[in-house]
Structure formats: C-alpha cells, structure tokens
Amino acid sequence: MVDHTAATDSMRTVRFHEYGEPADVLRLETAPIPEPGPGRIRVAVHACGLAPADWALCRGLFPGHLPRGIGCDVSGTVEAVGEEVTDVTVGDLVFGTADYAGQPSAGAADQAIMDHWFAVPEGLDLTQAATLPMALSTAHWHLARLGLAAGSTILINGAGTTVGYAAVQIALIRGMRVIATAGETYAGRLRDLGAAVTTYGDGLTERVKAVSEGPVDLVFDTAPANGVLPDLVRIAGGDPQRVLTCSDLTAAPGLGVRDTFHEDPTTFTDEERFGSFAEFARLAAEGRFTVPVSRTFPLDQWRTALDISVTGHAHGKLLLLPAADARG
Image (cartoon, rainbow, N blue to C red; front, side):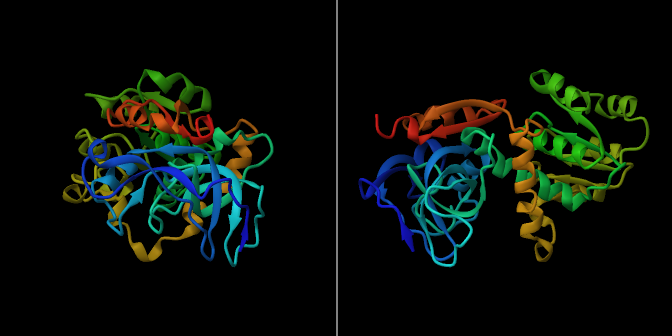
C-alpha cells in the first residue's frame, strides 16, 4: 500500500452509533483516519454530497456494523492506495462513492475510503464533481432498467429533483423525447435543455397528453411520494410495467408498478450504475451535463444541511466542504 502520511492520525467525521432519526443519532466526532484495504483508496475529501438516502441509512435502511457514516458522493485528492489498485496514484483528483457499508465513516469527513472512483477531467470543478455520483448512478440505472431507446418518449416525474434532473439530461443525450414534470424552480432550465415541461398536481394526465404529441412509452418517477402513481400508469397506456419509481416504494407493489427494490437483483450490473461516469464527467467538464447545487456548507455546519434536506425542498444538491473549515 502507498500511503501519504497525514499531519495527524485523527479526523472529523459525521456518523451514528445507533439507528433513529438523523437529528437524534448523528454526531460530529473525531475518529482514527482509516486505511484503505484491497481495492480501495483513501482521499482527502474536498466535497461530499448529502441525499435523502443518508437519512434512510440512519433510520436503518441496509443495516450493518455500527458506527457508520453518511455521505456517499465524494470528490477529493488521493492520499493512500490499497493493494490491487493500479489506476490512480497519490495526488490524483477523483470523484465517486464512499464505502459507507464497509467503513465506520463515509464521505462526510476529512478523509474517506472510496469503493468506486473516476478521474476528475480537466475543466470540472471538484465541488461540481461531487454532485454527480448518486444522481448519475441512480438515474442511469433506472433508465437502463426501463430501456434507453432513441426515439421513444419518456415522462420523468419529479424532474426538479437531482435524480430527475440528471435523468432528463441522460434521456435527451440518448436521443429520447422527454416530458418532465417540475415546479417553477427548474422549469425554465428543463425547457432550455429540450424537455417539454408541465406542472405537478391535478389534471396531470390531461396536461401530459397535451404536450406529448403521441403515446408515452415509459415513465420514471423520482418525485416524493404524493399518490400520483395511478395517473402515471394511465399516462403509460395503462401498463404498470412501463412505470418505474425510485420514490413511492410503498404504493408501487399494490399497483403492479416497478420499483427500485423489486427489480431482479440478479441482473444488477456495475455497468448500469457506473459505466457512464467517465462519459458524463467529460460532458460536465464541457458544460453539457450538470446536477444543480443548492448550497454548500463547511463540515461543522452539517446540521444546517440536514435541517434543509429533511424538508424535501432543498431545490438542488447540498454539499459539505470539509476542507473549508478543517484547518481554520
């Protein structure tokens, strides 16, 4: 293992020692700097993205050994390289995912162990790079499940979420016609990208029909659960198997709608989740792909970021910047 020795053997990390509501169980504390095992690297974290999935982990989703950290999306500078890793060296700039399941801390820390990483291309800011992993992998995986067929029409419900916004861009780049539901915050930007945009709320079926110029082939639902799945099934010609949700996991099974956790796990591939990272990082560096940033915070203001996130109205990615306050 190649190691770049830090000035201290401890770091700050936001993590939990028991399951419960995030505001009750999360703490900013000091912990030993972790060493990367085989197939892992350690980075000095520049930016870490927060997401609703972090709060679900605090409440017990995918339980495992405790303590555990939050923050899956990471960008930073390589400090140490584990055995069997040959594609990066100390000092390289990378972005990707923190090994939240295999470590007692994750990306919301001064240092993080990463399990998937990609080079940050020239022209891509490290803060912007940290917005990409979860939104890109979630959007691309779900679209791959549905089928990225050029010329087909897809409705993306919740296009103002980070996953939905990424999905709109991926679908357009792949040659699909996109109809997006969104609020005022991102409606204009989505139209500029090339999507036909309509609002949420009653009458959705009629509004989509008015802008669709033909049948809607597929529906990807990323909006917070709000009882709209029956309308989405009607929009998809009455076929619930043409609708896939990553948000309304409670209602989906009863309607026959596909959802994230009931897709066939034997067909999951890293290619669907991560195979597009290098391509879309290049597009991001060229200004042709983006995940909107709502606000950034020093690590010691993590609780403010949490309070905003749990409202469901962040209107973009919330990022912690550990380096901003790590050394005063």
